[in-house]
Length: 88
Image (cartoon, rainbow, N blue to C red):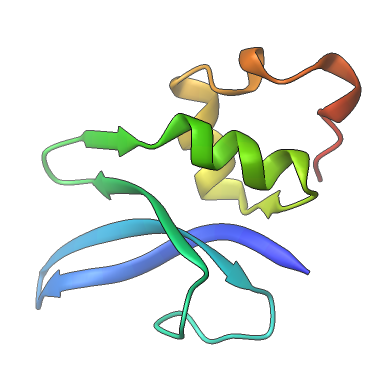
């Protein structure tokens, strides 16, 4: 199963995160399928590759709670058909 989740990058006390599509059984810094976004909680900046995110969501990828909140703020779920919005 594929999940959309955060992958920690950056230096100590200055974390930034990549939003990646990754296998559920992989560790946090494990090998990912594709990088689909970027999130900086300190500067509160977000970059999202919306077509790639929609591709993985349509294929059944489940976002984690944090990634789901980021995607909801960016209104990505409005671009999905209503029958596709079955997330935990």
